[in-house]
Image (cartoon, rainbow, N blue to C red; front, side):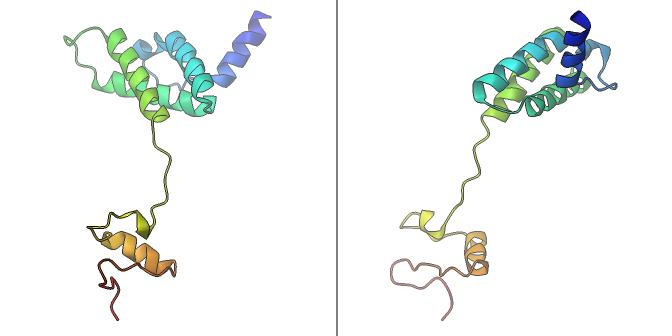
Length: 131
């Protein structure tokens, strides 16, 4: 039974061969934290695991001895990496009507609207597109 659990764990949380030994020491914490975050935020486990491995690699590359213990540094990197991943805002579609009444939309928004065939609204009676 233990061998089956180990096989399932390796499939769910693949560890790249290039992960340094210092970072490997944090794998039990990373696995538990990834499972908790994926369940809480209803995110794919594989995506969360990729973010955690990336954070471990980043911590291994950027850690400076003398600045504290690697364990604490890498643990913080994993927590923050997953926090940023979970807190990413959903891409929202911005229409031309999203600009406040005192400002004009930026050029990129106008070009996108023109490409989509939408008509740009006018502000204060002045048309935004050339006549």
